[in-house]
Length: 146
Image (cartoon, rainbow, N blue to C red; front, side, top):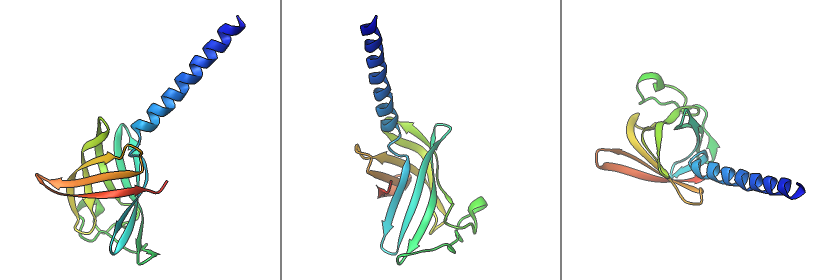
């Protein structure tokens, strides 16, 4: 009977580790990311909500200083003139294997909304983020901060 208990415990431990590994793999796109451009650095927090990947601007840094006054002047609708920090940037992304697709991404500089596809690197340290209209688009590589 003692050995049976040890075997059950061992199997549960292995199953638990497997579940943790599966959970971590299925959420490689979730976290805090840094997008670097020549004139600014944007920190974006991605998270899952109701099975969809979402993202908000956490911080905007220009010339090494946090910019808390920038607003989305070119945005329309609910985002119009809202502070960039806290602004919803990514929404409605659906899991498609290792990628997230069929969602939207906002470009605050122009106020334009694009179709979006996100693919995390296998090690979870980078995100390939592509915004596009039809066949025209742009891909950025975001680096994991945490």
